[in-house]
Length: 317
Image 1 (spheres, rainbow, N blue to C red):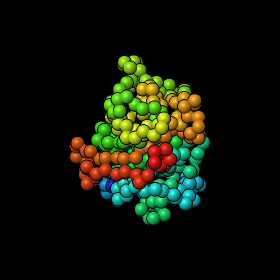
Image 2 (cartoon, rainbow, N blue to C red):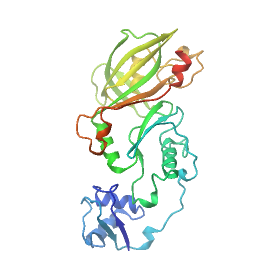
Image 3 (tube, one colour):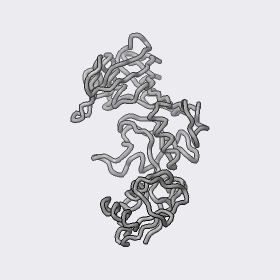
Image 4 (cartoon, rainbow, N blue to C red):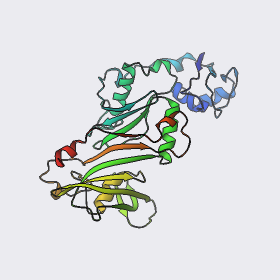
């Protein structure tokens, strides 16, 4: 027998979703069978997989102990010495300035040295999160940026913050600003780039079309030129939509590919600059909530900005 007391981080979760995380060794078909046989109960009453859990509920499983046997712990956050450039932190969220070259999550090339592992190590070592105190919740990233793009990434420290922040991002109640170095001088100096982006999953590349096309998604980016230096321009972009490689693809389609961008740029333009990845940085974030934000309402109207952007200091002094 095993009992779980539902905390605020597990509240409002469906029972079946909670069990899939809390007892991953329990097969889903067997879980459904045990629910029918009343071997899984909530507050000692018959339960269904789709019922919502409340804080303080007791979930009791009358099942074999083999499903709860601990497995070898190989979590990287236990051995990593965290290195983070923190932009802002409170009891609910963490804003981190990610360095270019670091993936936000593990991929085929990197399993341990990821942003989320550094964040987990940081929170674990400072005592802000202890997995032994949680049934299922793990601090998580609310947004992500490409490996070679730097800038602000949002992490939620608890489930209510994660739920609210994901909702705000979904409904575009955050303003995200990027700096990029582009070849040439955009004409006009500021404006709106619009188009329809079609993603080729095999090439991991998007293509811009001027008109709607099956499978293509509308994309819009506001831009304004801040400075010109030689053959380069420093441009600020505000995302109106948030599509894959949106800024890189749209600026290239407009005739001004990003400096160092090997996927959407041109090698002959990048030669001589000694840069082999895109000059793109998520440098500023504004919380612009238009609906209630519950526990995160205090963030509404606040703007956060990174202290420095390396390629700006290199090419636009």
